[in-house]
Length: 240
Image 1 (spheres, rainbow, N blue to C red):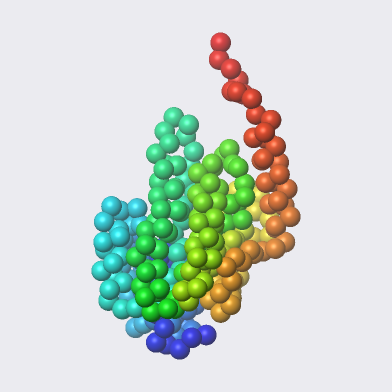
Image 2: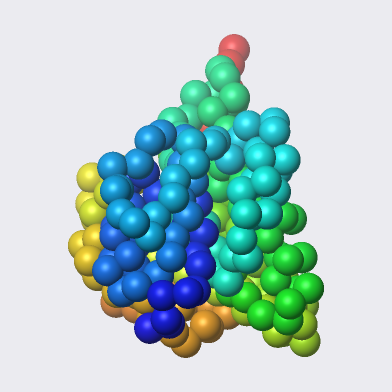
């Protein structure tokens, strides 16, 4: 792992993978700045925390001020929500896109140019294997992750000549509050998920999918969902 002088920014780290990654990397000697919409339970000499919501209108301005306090070598974007679906009110779907996709884009808007300027850096986003699905139950979640994966993998290719790495980490079920499904096959513990995060930090792949054991099931579900779209014709229950 890198020497203590390296600085990682973790966005969305008040719980789940973000919080667990923060604690692990502090133990490894990283200097860490955390951002989340709630206060952090972490108290450590190498840690600073800022309460900030990625969907706030002034997020970019405030993030610039935070980043301006010291060069960020690595950014891990962990912020993500699922949201509930209500066909009578799609505001929650909009918010899912604001957090899962636009928050990551706004973060990159601030951080990536500073990395390009010095010719090094690593931007990591936590996506999902659900990025290949078309979901009726939670349409905004899978769609926002699909856009997240597609954009940041393209960005990663574009930034290679500039010395900046981008990694898209596509996880399956992880034992967090986000894992709402009644059936969660091959679910990772938080320790296992952070093991993968550390692997991404070391190897800097453009895409990493874990666990591979769930990938065949995801491909099957993706195939089924595509056929559901192709066969759909008008409302399921037309009104009289």
